[in-house]
Length: 121
Image 1 (cartoon, helix red, strand yellow):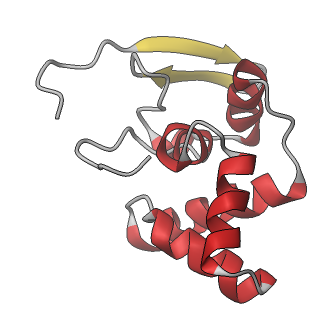
Image 2 (image 1 turned 90 degrees about the horizontal axis):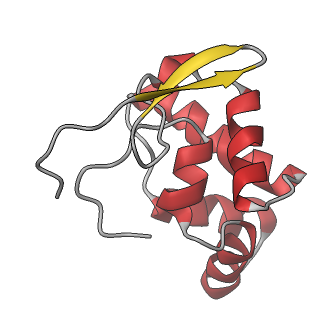
């Protein structure tokens, strides 16, 4: 768990400026835009596909409903139920889409604040 205050910087995008913490997570999720996700994808060398956007949109919708980033278990259930994947295949697919991990890439691209004490990836 982090104990020091975040160092905040500004990220200029064509749609406007957003504040990010030192790890690159947006500080105000309500200011998220698709451009923010696209920018992070370019930085990470990811070409966003429809599968990426389905997960990002699901995280955003869950945030709109509950005001908290959804746990990866729920995203994996989406893949299992919506796409008919096994639990194993859903995990493999998640790592194919977001190779640095759900929290480090999917949650960040979806414009969530950096989780304070999550142990998942």
